[in-house]
Image 1 (spheres, protein in one colour):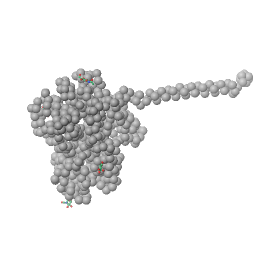
Image 2: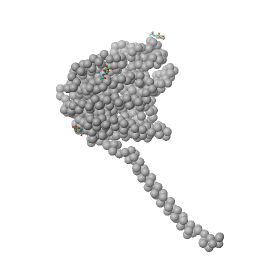
Image 3: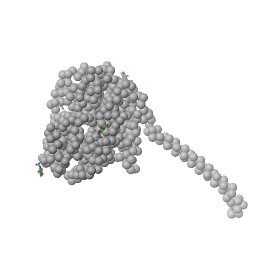
Image 4: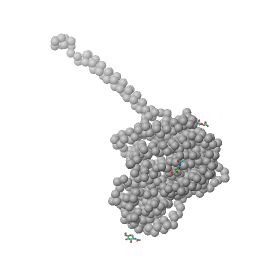
Length: 553
Ligand SMILES: *[C@@H]1O[C@H](CO)[C@@H](O)[C@H](O)[C@H]1NC(C)=O
Ligand SMILES: *[C@@H]1O[C@H](CO)[C@@H](O)[C@H](O)[C@H]1NC(C)=O
Ligand SMILES: *[C@@H]1O[C@H](CO)[C@@H](O)[C@H](O)[C@H]1NC(C)=O
Ligand SMILES: *[C@@H]1O[C@H](CO)[C@@H](O)[C@H](O)[C@H]1NC(C)=O
């Protein structure tokens, strides 16, 4: 570790604070181990292929974002890159000792303590906290971390002196945009959470692309009223959300005079945007040339299961096992649901491996092994695994898909709903509503997926498609890192049309309006000509003779 303003002593106290933290933190630690189950060998090469600064997004504790970064850092270091980490000293990103080992250098900057939110609680009682409030909380959190960095200009100057070859930041880390502009170096913006609405980088066509990840809309299956809903979300996003999201960070940059004249919306324009996604499962959508999808980087060689779990799983016989896990953030459910799950799972001939952190349910069946932590990917890969009961976070979803394991999906929050829908669309999952779940519906869903062979067949097909890539995903990842460094960014792929054009132009509304006007003029002229010719004809041939007229009077 090195940081002029943060001597090691300070670091030590942070580490002590972390190790003596509450149950919540222990939980996070368990999660950490789980999430980093696939360890790459960490070896430091003698000659560096490049010096990379990783600036992740840290919010809500050790979540999938930082876990992704840690894994990528291991891969990069094993291939001879020097990888430094830039992170807030009070960021709840897991154990400092671990980070110290994974990165060549950890640059800490003083930051505010923001772990004042109970993630499991928020998730389980999702409805009680509106998603808007939640997003505001996250923005506020990111903003305070960003301010901690920008308010100390010497930190940025030191970063500049390091002369990095590449900034590797999180797509949702808006402060990464400011740092990228300041350092003015090639940048990769990685999105571990798949496609996130950003008008500037991914053409967002509300006619068929679901705008909100929480919505249960499907491309091509939106009725007229659903399209109204989606379009309204799109408009709200562009009128209210984006101006606020980018505006707050723009103000911050102006306040501290960090390249104040530049627009944060434009910052990632010449960056490479790496999106964790595969169109085998993901919804179809157009992307700009500087956007590259990548998936399967972490799907690597299996590791042996821990002894107790291995014995249990191997002894399951032909009935196989069911794996139950609700992701990194949700270690356990509430007491009532815990007991209900335990009762239902006890009714199956399969053996069950279930991750329940903390107190174990009283109704646990003798076929169920409740563990504080489980090596999810290795378990899903096991030949005896028949079924996965999951909350459908992106990592869990992809692990199930890669391993061809049918899923009983129980989405609870954020992108889980869409991930569950994607698996259901592919015919490898049965989706349940977590909020209204009953003992009966849970039991029949599990029987359904276990007994209907179509789920397994579809899962095998999905896995085969995911596996069939031009080059191994890890090589693809390393190629692009190298590519961006080699060519000093991807400005040549830059597609700023989406930012420079307004929606009026982008959707060709002005052309449609012009067409309409031309059409109206043409109709008007045609109508006039028609009317004149009728009048003329009337006067020439059909109009009564003046004599008759006089006669009539
Ligand atoms: C961070 O949180 C801990 C415990 O919640 C508290 O003791 C400490 O004072 C906080 N630090 C800051 C800088 O707010
Ligand atoms: C931002 O400001 C820094 C320091 O003044 C400068 O080195 C850098 O080139 C600027 N970035 C851009 C994109 O102009
Ligand atoms: C598990 O419990 C069931 C009934 O609840 C019983 O029939 C079975 O023998 C038990 N198995 C073992 C290994 O104890
Ligand atoms: C994945 O592809 C590799 C070759 O690229 C092949 O050896 C392997 O058997 C495939 N695995 C599955 C599960 O299809």
